[in-house]
Length: 169
Image (cartoon, rainbow, N blue to C red; front, side, top):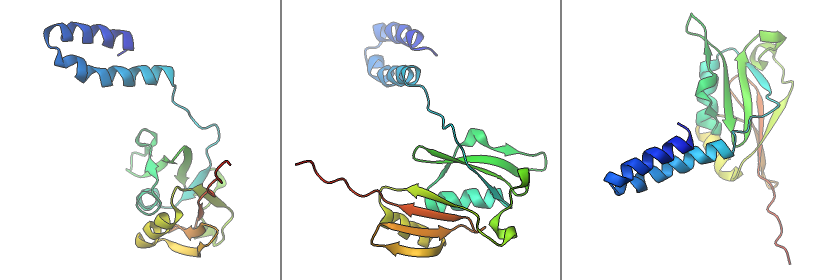
């Protein structure tokens, strides 16, 4: 519903029940924000091939804190997930079928061909979460606030924390 229509509805309801004004205010503000601040969509979305996309999605969420964009999931008639998008902060990565477009999972290829860097707010806490979820640590957490981990199919992930900016004097 458009903000102008929500405002009209809210005015009618508030005339009969003043408490409706408080309840409707948050809904109206959210609608206005969505109209004023359009959803940003990334212009570059890297794609990673996985043999088992369902398992990859579960792992990436549990170990690394990614969230699947539920509307992006493509499922075949056989019930197999063929593609999905995951997000972390303002970044998005596609999770695709092994072999599609010639892309092969490191699990089958036996070699890593890339790594993905992800900035996190607290690399120490992220490292502990990943270890607890069974991530294979490829490079231990270092004093430079960075570590590397492999997912179950061998994709290399590099997690790091931006250095804190020095206070202005």
